[in-house]
Length: 280
Image 1: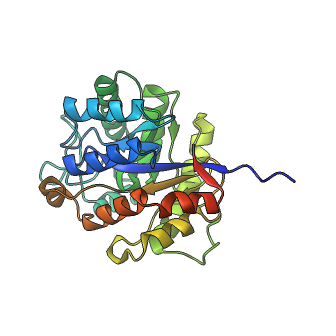
Image 2: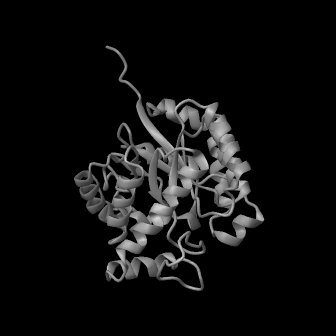
């Protein structure tokens, strides 16, 4: 009897463009073929021409590495469009407030869609092509009202791309999971339904959400992420090197270096082989 075929999965590093150190770590992992996707935040501070050219060079040397748009709608980043609302001190709203106003349906969907369309256009300007896929920083693409705007902008501006949903394929395989994972499961059900109605493909499973303040052993977490992930599923990660720019913008710092260290170790490819998984 022949051995079963390995699952082909996406391992996606989010936040390319948030800082030079994060960019450098992601490029190194792509060149080592330890990642096969990265999401670029065109609203980030580290997306100048040199950083884009360097990413393109890393991807060119790696087979089947996808580049997506990491759509940004939360603080401390700034919109690309002039008339975006609501804002807080010239920045997007913080995550918790954005979720609250979206649940109360107090957002203007057309303003959100215009901003997301501008970010897609900026990606095309930088890379000379549309993104391979689209996702959202801090999963904001799943929120009520934003979901519709996101899918509409994707269908119009990048019709050949797929979109990221963040629901687990087997939600209760490891118990209830964290409150964050449960929230993502719930929000993703509607997102998947609407994406299907729009004719936009999406990943069949998702993993990678965990409590960044209590990181533990990232190797053990990766084993859990792979357990039950279907063929074509996606694992989100946040590797990189800490620098001053990152410290100013994001609370997720040292854990990025721990993720990077694990992904460069011999343990990671051994785990992929043991769990019959391979990067697409």
